[in-house]
Length: 548
Image (tube, rainbow, N blue to C red; front, side, top):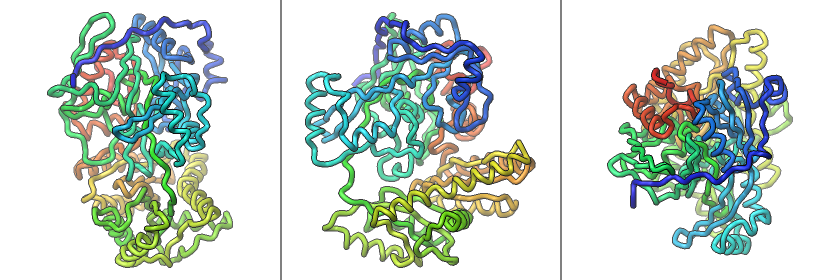
């Protein structure tokens, strides 16, 4: 094991076929979507947008920008909610043309298949190709080992998938890696980080790092990177302690960490990820989705504690929550859509939506074990909705989106009268022991103010989204003050200010709550070591220091 790695000089690049958009009229009209992301929080601007088709072109573009000290924004699909992909001047590099699946690999010692892709591959396309095994496009692209792994994979009787399931399936693989994306199944499988075996990343000066997991680990918190010209730089890992929760806030840091983890979740401030190798898992033989209805929030939370404990009779793939206000939205939307939700009644004050795997041999034992836990918390299989048939599964998928659809509709209506109005949605997570207290804290604060809100989300990871829905401009200000209050409380309880959506440009002030000035300075030092001119994705995660 070593803490040293040597960067590669990029291949000679042919830029003749690289798409370039540089007329401002074209940028602001035809390419206006490239100046925004799903946060809709910043007025984007850029001098030029380039669309490289391969890594060599990315490296050539970054090297030229480095030499001329031009700021660069590296873009994925722009599905993020924090402004990370929004350019605020300089050059924009969009990786949408780098959309090839490359090759398969099989690790005998782990019984693990992986697939390697370019950064611009859509998550949805990757999942569909893997599950259907329609992978003709990657034949002949790898060496003998990769060809053998592909043949073996195609002959497997089981179906496979990439287990991390971000809600936005139109995200790109480079983006989900740069943001360490997660989703409901993070409860069982962890976030993207746990499934990345290899990346290639282009540094600010155009050099390339090819990083395989397990090959380069920090020594006493230090990495040594040698550039292709022989210059060596030392990277000191921040000394702050990461929260004991699902987390997407700031640079990953542990004294003996793997170098690959420094770039995963770094939101583009350290380099442009061009290639990712991801692990795959077999699809379960059978799955059973269930919406369990509870007469109180306490009953629902108690069920979650018991069903995710080490001695639980059923191991869940995910656990999702809908609070009282969310249930009212679901009822209203279901009624207007003509959908009848079995067992949902006026006595239902909380819903836990979960899914578990079963086989014909163990189904009865799991259902009986589940019934015992449900009964303990004043629910039952009779007062639940299970999706055994395809038609029920489809209805469940539709109902799952009722809450965010309703919230977005309310915001759109109110914004017409009060332009300042926008949804204010939290992204905090807390340790297991703090779930009940944090949920009650949300309610105490918001009920006391009379603020309209809805709580739902990934309760399995103690990661609940509280969407505040302002009625006017004054409540927007109140909601933003609340966000800071909730962030401070989460950190006080040992949690994070950003569990899955990252920091970007929008949440930098909240990051300071977690790590303090010293932590921010340590992150800045990491960036300065790898991007001394401070050119890549300026404004993301940490502020630009005064001397830049």
